[in-house]
Amino acid sequence: MVTELEILVRSTEIDVNGHVNNAKYLEYLEWGREDWYEQCGLDYETLKNLGIVTVVAHVSANYRRESVQNDRLRIQTRLKEVGNTSFRMQQFIYNQRDELVLDAEFVVVTVNPDTHQKVRVPDEIRAKVFQP
Amino acid sequence: MVTELEILVRSTEIDVNGHVNNAKYLEYLEWGREDWYEQCGLDYETLKNLGIVTVVAHVSANYRRESVQNDRLRIQTRLKEVGNTSFRMQQFIYNQRDELVLDAEFVVVTVNPDTHQKVRVPDEIRAKVFQP
Amino acid sequence: MVTELEILVRSTEIDVNGHVNNAKYLEYLEWGREDWYEQCGLDYETLKNLGIVTVVAHVSANYRRESVQNDRLRIQTRLKEVGNTSFRMQQFIYNQRDELVLDAEFVVVTVNPDTHQKVRVPDEIRAKVFQP
Amino acid sequence: MVTELEILVRSTEIDVNGHVNNAKYLEYLEWGREDWYEQCGLDYETLKNLGIVTVVAHVSANYRRESVQNDRLRIQTRLKEVGNTSFRMQQFIYNQRDELVLDAEFVVVTVNPDTHQKVRVPDEIRAKVFQP
Image 1 (cartoon, rainbow over the protein chains, first blue to last red):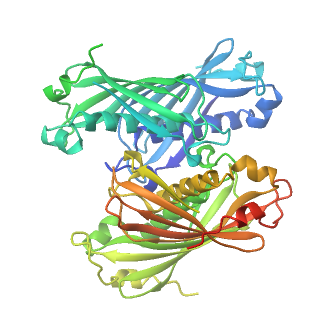
Image 2 (image 1 turned 90 degrees about the horizontal axis):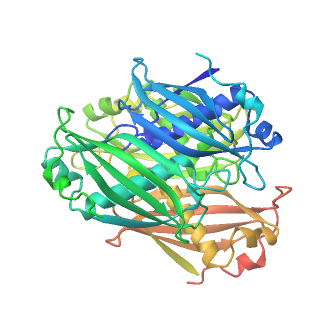
């Protein structure tokens, strides 16, 4: 399962230097992960019914190329691997010239919505690991 | 040289879960780095006169604790090490209970404002490496 | 000339109450006006060559209904009337159920890019007034 | 009761033109109103216990002067008048040179948290009307 979300860079998303700021890309990446969850049938309510909420514990990102207003970006998202109480997602952003703009990895932890204790990643998520 | 910037978490900075979103912290960190540059006497204009602009090439961040509205956060920023055409900054965010909320490292590249080619990190920045 | 821009409400665009915050709508409206300028062949560079930049001087907006994540919003934009050195734009946001979410009016002033003095609205903009 | 909140314009809050964008000011104004509620002893929980939540129904704002990075802005907030199920707040933003940057009025509606029906503005809010 690899999902791809296409977005257009908006005027209020560029900074004084005329390009997308490093922090804004993390919003784009969250939109991509939300889209992945939804396309996997694992939206917020479904996960809550499975007894978990997901929390970002770590991000690592490489900024490769700048983006400007009206750039058409494709955000690719995949589940790379699953541990006991966390999993690792991999994301890539490409522009309309198919150039790599950014690559990133997120470690996401599964916790109980009430106790906030770490809980085992449910099988419904494990089933979605990307098989190249 | 270690700088510390204090901020208050505002209502529009928390998400549907009632805490600061992972992307928003990267804005806080940028505010902290801007403050570091200014306190070092290395603001945007000064750097431009030295023939460089700074570009974020990499971020790595660990989210340790959540933050909620009206939390008073301290953003600590230091220059960890300097390479040929890039340097590494280290940042920590603490809350009003002195708990570590987040730690992060940024790799920042120095480029020529006109050609966008990488150039050597100027001595004015090298002089600011943190000595523990 | 009436333009219509369709957007999807993203996870990072909703606040702690689970709906789009009043300030965020003004970003949506700016995206709509940018789209109007571009569809009219009046992008930033073209306007600058005509000797003007546009500056928002006034906004008035009525919030009619709330929006939530994944709502599909249509932003309608039209030029309502043109004065000597300013013009009035009218905007409406509808959701996927064709319910009116927001209506707004902006007064936009045309100024010289260098002197920042008000200048006459160019004929290229006047020609675009909406004729019902 | 007039409250005044001081903020510093941050790097990520200015747009490609180097000044604070029209939408961003509405976030500043919300911070000012939140501060007013809290200084009045009328925070979110207290209002909920009084059987209401507040919803913005209308905004009208005049942009008087631009703001740039590191500007120190003072956001003044007062309750102008109270109707049956709504009230009107007035806000002013001044910069470090005491120049008026923006003035705005908000109509805020009081609704029942569960039914979302309009309810009478509680006396606790009525008591806070600004007396010049």
